[in-house]
Image 1 (cartoon, helix red, strand yellow):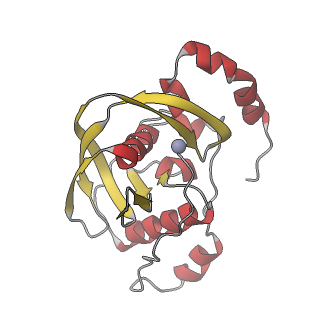
Image 2: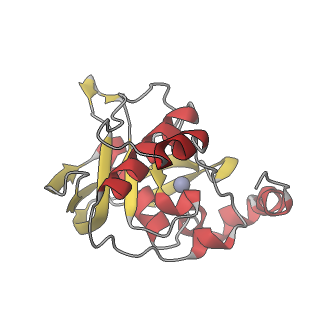
Amino acid sequence: MPKRRRKPKNTATSDVGGEDSVVLRETIPLQLRYYGDPVLRKRAEPVSEITDAERQFADQMLMTLAATGNGIGLAATQVGVLKRLIVVNIGEEDDEAYEPLVLFNPEILSSDGEIVAEEGCLSIPDVTADVKRPENIVVEGLDAHNEFVHIEADGLLARVLQHEIDHLNGILFIDRISGLKRRLLSDELQRLQRAERPS
Ligand SMILES: [Zn+2]
């Protein structure tokens, strides 16, 4: 997604401790998965119960997103976890400040309009393309406290939500560009697919 430089507020829960927490701290930021990794093509499963472990994972996702320096959204799929969870932190848009957003089991209920904007993806480094998507969407899901969330989004928020929900269905933004444009990117994509990545 477009680059923004703003750290999210630290929303780490302090009520999760125990012996696991030391191990978890050592694993932050979580390892990002990159284009060519088969996990990015899998469909993520709904989260049936939002437990402390799920909340802690959501916090790790937010910290991982912050650690990228320019990311504004992250889906669990991108760290190799096939759960329907996304985190979004777009910072400010049009003088409006947005809180970091944690959304379990997000669903797009409706959409309308059409708009083209440039996208990128933390899992597909250094590749950007114009992508046409609905302009306005209505999304529902659950937050980290198991509360129902209803979002009517436009602009950057609508775009990042659609991009991240696509990840949960194994869809990448390059799937949504025309064949011609994708062919122009094919050398770059093949290079990424062959790239050695830390495991
Ligand atoms: Zn992405």
